[in-house]
Length: 382
Image 1 (tube, rainbow, N blue to C red):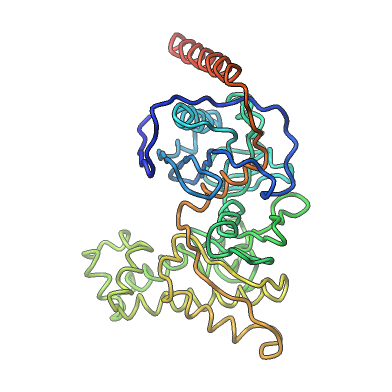
Image 2 (tube, helix red, strand yellow):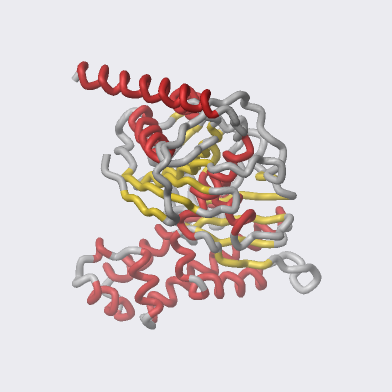
């Protein structure tokens, strides 16, 4: 397996074990969780990022690899996760593993009910991984994980009521109140991208029409730019020249780059996306009344080119404007690592302290023996 390593702090030569859990009861507060290293895994449609994170949110080491093709069995992705965790645990004293999955996770945070970019359908991910890793495992939605990280270590610190919106290919989101992630009765709260904002509007892959993410997301941004370029619009000449006429090469980061350089059409497109963002935020404010909205995801890299118009539209569409406090709208601070950091920190809630070094050595030996035997059996069967 090809991986990308990035050592962000000196790593000692001592080999450290992955430890066996002694229970599954979740701790009630991060304030009482043990200050021990944990591993966070962020699984997306194109990459799997794993990192060891300390109790202050610092990344001690990270690994990255490509996501196995979604047509393969769920075990292929689970094998990738196991290999990354075992690799990291060889150098770090890992006490728990947190998984941030791009999909719907049930209220018990065990099963991935549906993952659009992977072959997980009602997959008991937590139990499968806990059996193989011999440590406590926590599974949550990737947006929930990112929101937790921003609340603990980033732009949402000090906020009692926070809503996070992640703008990427689509729109994801999460709700935090009084230090708790609000997951809903069935675990799938926060799917803001599929609120209907334009009845009969653009068709969404979810099957409905007029969903918010069809007007304020990376896909919406690229779709509008490509349509303008395909129509040979005079205002699109800059981006057409940039891609040498190959319209399929137009991407979200490219549009942001050209907007920063002053391309009028790209600036206007980001303003349009930002205005739709503000409309949706105003709707969420009417329903949830948070004190802060944190905007994350790849599209948020446009910063004030996007968030400035969003703030303006929010003020125009906010119910009771002028007679109520306005929530802050800020850009996320932790970038693409937020999901990994948040998953690791959430896993600390189920981590346990271990003090007997002899038991650690024995368990490490047994674990590697089982893993090596499984690898040998796989090779012999091929």
